[in-house]
Length: 142
Image (cartoon, rainbow, N blue to C red; front, side, top):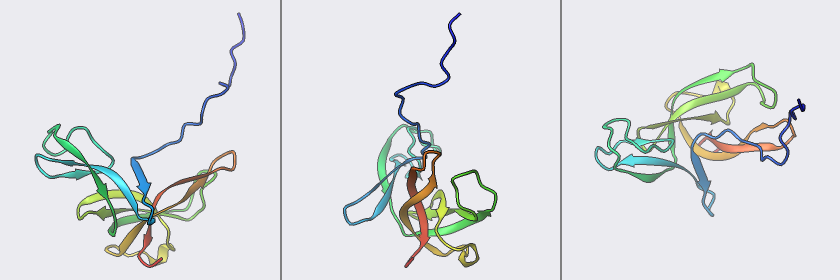
């Protein structure tokens, strides 16, 4: 019986991703969410079916800052490639859509209710030394 190869050549790296986001020419970051046209509830990441009323009548919506910090935690033990400590938190965008993301601020400066802006930054460095970027929060003015 032939020995199986342990690696698959010419396969692109699969990168974890939670939701879609983009950056406008003016630098404004927006997250791609969904709004239910039946009940008005908004979600991130996108959904095909409303989590509130179960309607399939949804449309794409762009969620932008400012956001308000709802809750957070500080992680001190992280996998390789992440810098510790890492603050991560839920912030409300568009008034009521809670989004989880890293926060670019010293943990002792964080306060529930503080205003945050959406930014793009390096989330971690992968095993090949390549930076992985994604959306993040930062205190407004930071």
